[in-house]
Image 1 (cartoon, rainbow, N blue to C red):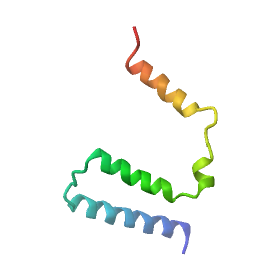
Image 2 (image 1 turned 180 degrees about the vertical axis):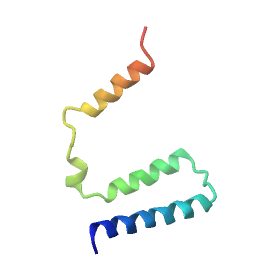
Image 3 (image 1 turned 90 degrees about the vertical axis):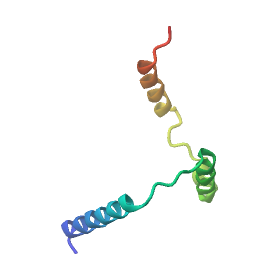
Image 4 (image 1 turned 45 degrees about the horizontal axis):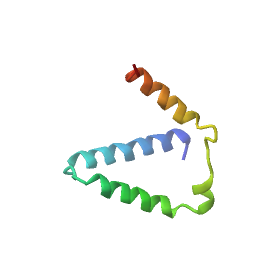
Length: 75
């Protein structure tokens, strides 16, 4: 199978998923339930993954704070 065929197949799979998803009724969930699910998924990662810091200088947090400061400047 060529790369082009693989890409087409993947696009068809996503299109089918999006059609299926559009037909599903929305599920109302409490934020606490969503956080509990995320916590469970996080706990499935091995300890070496959970303790690795991909951004030791916290550049992502700095960028987010800079963007928020533009949206809501302090007096």
